[in-house]
Length: 153
Image 1 (tube, rainbow, N blue to C red):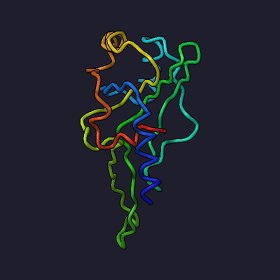
Image 2: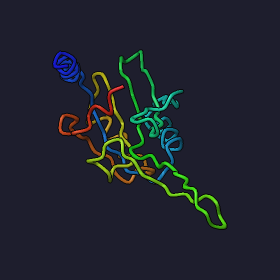
Image 3: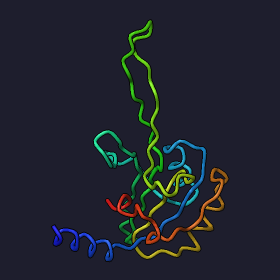
């Protein structure tokens, strides 16, 4: 068991990426559209969601920029799961939403933009700041996140 753990730790040390926290009240598809339009990206919805547990999945958008050798990924930080409960009353089912976070220690962040490959952090930051659809955007240090594993596909 210790061997698996050390291999995984080695993989994490080799995995480096630039990470931005994005705050916006837009839906994920609308934000991806505005990032594509305003920052010259080509993000598209990935065919499979990122599953953290059997009942929790996070949709994400991805673009493999082969020309510049970069990979861009937009993650939603929140997923609301509707749970139905059987009741014996007039209305046989009652629903309650349960909220899950991709990065629980950053519950205030709406989205994360992950960039793998060499990129000018300041240029990306300026491009993001120019988008009126974003309330704010700032760089995060991925190594400071306890849930960094959730961002590695």
